[in-house]
Length: 250
Image (cartoon, rainbow, N blue to C red; front, side):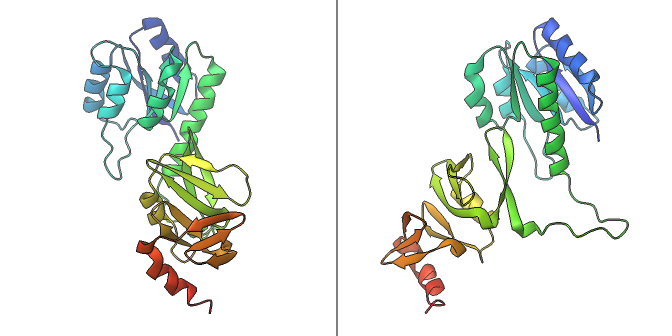
């Protein structure tokens, strides 16, 4: 597969370098090169072929790279271009994460660093492709209910359902505690969004801030559940549903 790319930078030498790196990467295809975010936005609107990847400088006049990333609307089924920021200033890393950037290249960067990001973009594109019905019988794939992918920093991390002990909601983030690792995964998503992706036979929300893996509950107290060394409260609004689950144990 080839990814169609656009490069945007108001520094001509930097723009030329990114263009050269794109052209020497076999699975990338340069379809546009712009000296400003305004010109890039116009070019994106006029492109007849879908753009998969945008290498975007941040500090530019009139419209900066972060502002351009914010105005790119992604329609359902049309994910739009993934953004890789290219900048000389590392203080924008958090802002890049907030606009769902794929990665961040700090100038001056080498072709090796560029290729690492390009490979990540290729892997993401392959992962996002809808599966087509096979023309011939194929070996059975892993059941879709066995795992999910979480965005952690600038990566998609595969998390098997059976490994999830419990999940804690922290406003715009969630912490996913796993049996296999001592440190939780921190992902920019809501507990409600994650709840919709989890199989209800394996997970239950028992509190506005907690979802638990039902197979990992060691014991149940008065208004609490125990998973490993952790005690997690059951709130009143979820108690009836949880009590129905508990009644199956009796």
